[in-house]
Image 1 (cartoon, rainbow, N blue to C red):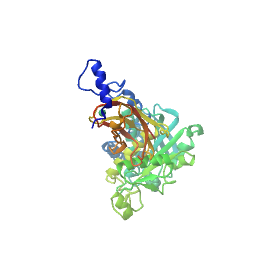
Image 2 (tube, rainbow, N blue to C red):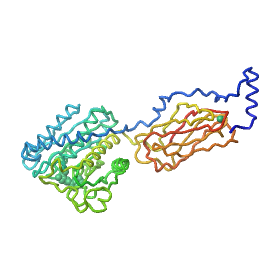
Image 3 (spheres, protein in one colour):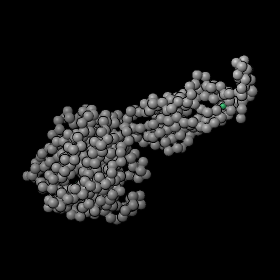
Image 4 (cartoon, helix red, strand yellow):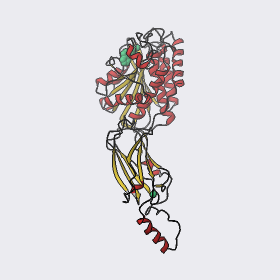
Length: 450
Ligand code: DTR
Ligand code: ZN
Ligand code: ZN
Ligand code: CA
């Protein structure tokens, strides 16, 4: 489709005057530079928030479990408070963390006439006034090795800490990991830690994430319904997997997050279930066996490494990493945050579509129903242009259709898109195509505003 001849006549006359009578060539956009490689500034336009967490290797988590199982086997069959198996467990975890560059502290306490130990591991760096904690109790009951309860949580937190070291993560917040003693005696170790944490130090703890039984053999996927932002972070992770979750209803007071919650620290966590029975509705959504306990070996000698559901352990270990990476990135990206691409991208005349991208990260949940798309496209006949927004999953939202008669210059406009069905984080693209001969232009810049 070409335009009414008036513009061409003018163009031909200009060329004739210049003695350059050749086939009419599309006027390059006024002042428009040639297409440039993606501008490094474009990447700088992304929000300075969370990087994506790495996948936590299930094999590594299971290797920790195997080690803890061996420790129990070498120490009377358990890793209980006051027994040699517990101190050996502490020594194992501590050695891994020391080798990975953590600053570790063993905090001693007495309970039921025996010495107990908490292991605290600080990752150097981050704002000391914003401390994100993640923890798990390391002790078992005396009747068994305690692989699901709570080798699973201990190993998941340990491997996440080691992943922080592998990544040399430098988040805005300071990261602190903890393995608690004597949880099975009544949350003793974690309570001792909180009670002995000076109030000035307590106020620096922005959140505590608790992981107690995250690999139950007949698993449910329960999220603590405590701090909303923490809860949402876990829910978003599972939404990304397409795995439904339920609110953990019996959690209050039932594990080590209780002492943190009691002093007003934001808490959250994950749980795959203990002696309660999985309902048929839950078996429908999660698989497994209805009418059977989530963990038939709860507090029993059969709580061994074969009492673990690998899928649950894998997913929850990855969820721990997701939460640590996301929540340690500092303040969630404020509303109205703008993500901009500034690289100029030439639009071939009557040719293939071109795209310009922005990367959104550090947000939680989906994009809003009123996602603003601001475009600045220089073009000498804007009726040539078809413009779409492409969501990270490729879904196209039409912003502008071509309209041959619209001969005005440039498209400088803001469109509102209902992107509420799209996950916010990811790479978004502006796609522009010039569908008519003559006149052309370039993408000057564009923005997404959440
Ligand atoms: N008290 C934990 C097991 C447990 C039972 N209910 C919940 C809810 C949330 C976390 C843990 C638990 C133990 O036996 O270690
Ligand atoms: Zn227990
Ligand atoms: Zn437990
Ligand atoms: Ca054209």
